[in-house]
Image 1 (spheres, helix red, strand yellow):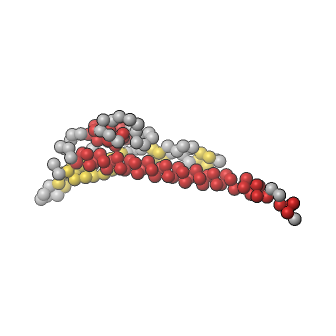
Image 2: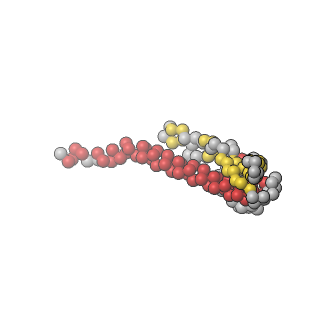
Image 3: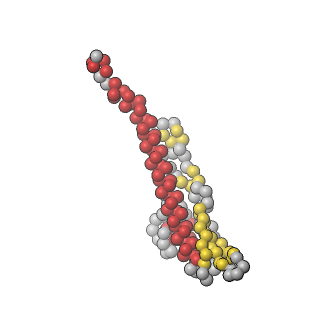
Length: 142
């Protein structure tokens, strides 16, 4: 009886291996996308915090560098693969309230596309997808 089942486990493993690889790849890519989204969100928050301490309509280039590179000098590699200064539109300063009037600054990232490591596997197209705009608004004490 046991001689008829020799190699059955190997055949079952060969049948299930593509599904396991696809699931592993999906989890890995989802983790990468979540990591990049979180990195961009934190950098936008840092830039909004930086701009909230600047006089209105100043420091936009430094804030843009802070979003893309993580520092105001604009040196090093981008925080997220494919993130450029073109993805960071000019920040906006607004006023809210009547007494006291609050100065608000908003900075955002638009048009960023997550690039998958492998666009397709086993005939399944994963492709690249665009994040929705990420923005942060902070109150300026100035």
